[in-house]
Every structure is written in structure tokens, then in C-alpha cells.
Length: 160
Picture 1 (cartoon, rainbow, N blue to C red):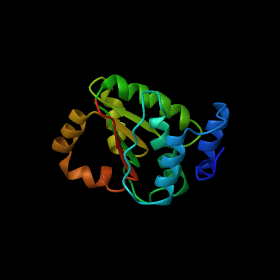
Picture 2: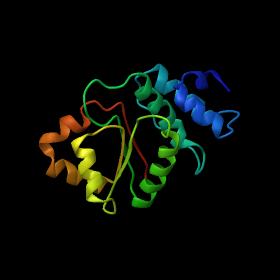
Picture 3: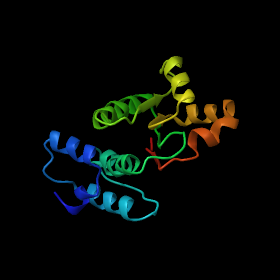
Picture 4: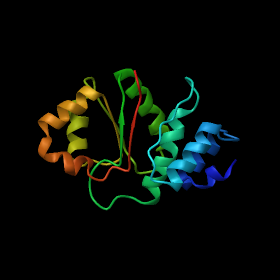
């Protein structure tokens, strides 16, 4: 693999090896280098099934694992336009995060209130949420926004 692979946290590298990855796609290698070496904003564009999810999440998860936040709050925020996409992304991320203590929290209208309550009580990890649910959270929990999102390492989103 490339030098981009070496920039990823050990649990992420282990997951990649378990998947049988022999190399990173170009968009993934370039994204990993940009995210790990700069503070620049990044837009990742590739075809469907082109590796965009991993291009963004692998280096961001690595940053969270290598330098955990000191306070409370979610580490990463993913805004997805569809419940089905969020559910799919959550399953993929749970697989990647399986050997870490980084929770993956899907949040939309079909997610149980107990999961949401637990996440609000102890926000940590990756929050995957629809724009509508994020808006409702801001309206209903406006005074808690700094506690929930004040130490985000990254924000990602998908277009519809």
C-alpha cells in the first residue's frame, strides 16, 4: 500500500488488511493525505461505489483514534439525505469501528428513542443524521449544541 496507508490509525489499517485490500484507490490515497496533512476543507467526488465513504471516514476515524477529544461530544458528524443511506453507512462504519471504542450512532425517524436518549446523555463517536433530524435536534436541544458538537473533528455529507 502507499504512504497514505501509513497515516491511518492501527485499528483502521488492521480492518483494511482483514478486508483483503491490497491498495487504496487514488481518491482514497489523495483524501487521506489531504485530511491527515492539512486543515483544508475537502470535497470528495467519485462515481458510485468509487470509494468516497472510505476516502473520508478512514482518515477522520484515524484522527479521532490517534488524538481523542478531551471533552464530551460527538467526534464526527455525517449528514445523509436518506434514512436508508444512513442505515447502510452505519453498518459499514460499525464494521470499521468494531475493534475501537468509537460508537456509531444512526439518527433518523426510524431509530428508537432509547438509542437517541443514550447518545444525548453520553455523546461520543460518529453521529449519522438526516438534515431534518439535525434541524429538530437544534430546535429542541439548542442549549446543548455546544456540548454535543463543540469538539467535532469533521463533518461529512452526501448529496441526494
